[in-house]
Amino acid sequence: KQEVTQIPAALSVPEGENLVLNCSFTDSAIYNLQWFRQDPGKGLTSLLLIQSSQREQTSGRLNASLDKSSGRSTLYIAASQPGDSATYLCAVEETSGSRLTFGEGTQLTVNP
Amino acid sequence: KAGVTQTPRYLIKTRGQQVTLSCSPISGHRSVSWYQQTPGQGLQFLFEYFSETQRNKGNFPGRFSGRQFSNSRSEMNVSTLELGDSALYLCASSITLAFTGELFFGEGSRLTVL
Image (tube, rainbow over all chains, first blue to last red; front, side, top):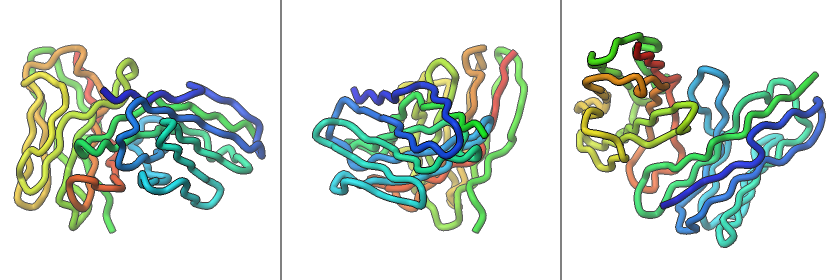
């Protein structure tokens, strides 16, 4: 059974800092990995999607990497802003089906 | 382009009642999946529908059911509600089924069971 773990569970940083969120998964037979953002009481917003054949994806200040063999992904946020405060979730889509398995998320607070 | 729309956004029920939640996917999307989010269990997959057929089901009791209509709109139903069913229910749509790539989520329906 696939298990997804995110470290740290919570992170508080001053504005402007660069930061890294970590995601690990137990079964490397994945089709893709997605990073989402969730604001309190809201749905999920897709940030980056990395196919299993890719090593990284970039969007603006966000960069996500994927090392499928070691079961790890990182989300790098450059020059963090208070508006980045949210919970960040990673999820893997397994080749055996289209369901997503989510991690518990990292709650990020960026202080002005 | 309208996003995924879920109704109602909030609802309160009592134990033993049933509830029906609705999800309208992005226009042109044929796959709809449902997830339950709770503080203790996180996000868990409920089921997925494609072309009016359930294609995938998570590990939930039979009290949880769903369906998809010909216009791709989907409903999920929970019967004989229990306190533990209190959660945010999220619907997601994608263009196709397996190896769907990017999912687009709605704002969710927050269910409180008293």
